[in-house]
Figure 1 (spheres, one colour):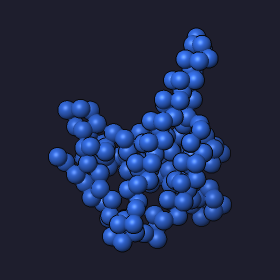
Figure 2: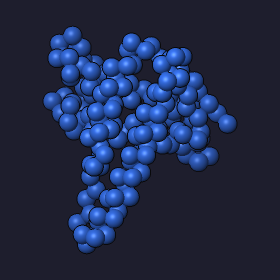
Figure 3: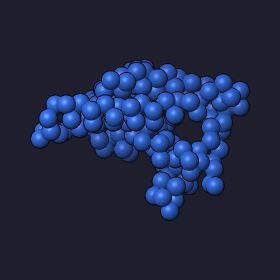
Amino acid sequence: MKRIEVKLALPVVAPLLDVMKELADGLRQNLAAPAGLPDLDEEFRGAWVGDLLVTQNHDVQTLLALFDDEFFKEGVVAFDEENAEVLVRAAAALRLRLREHSLKTLDDETLESGEIEMEKLAEPLRRAFMCYLFLATIQELIIQHLDEGILGG
């Protein structure tokens, strides 16, 4: 089984984890990408959205669980084929939440290119943007090194 271990700088990552935890709280009762289901009856829609929320919350909690006591001792997180898909989905949910709330003043090109003068951003926006980039990096690492696991290959 493929596995990647990444050593992270605790002083850089710790503030981003606070942002991620706040986002997770905001996602507890809200889908990152609300489902548009206009032709479904309310009971079916409620059940389906409920199932999606359970999965989304599980995924996000799995990602946050990587940053446990051991992480704060060693500074290392591990991604493998078993958790790859869940972690990519969790990072996507958190990034969507960031995009729709904290980063809504930034256009898509800026967000995706990462080209921005960080010192010109207010502290909360800077932390949100850094978190967005951090989550994108996690997704890229997993897809680049574990894509067979994600694709089921």
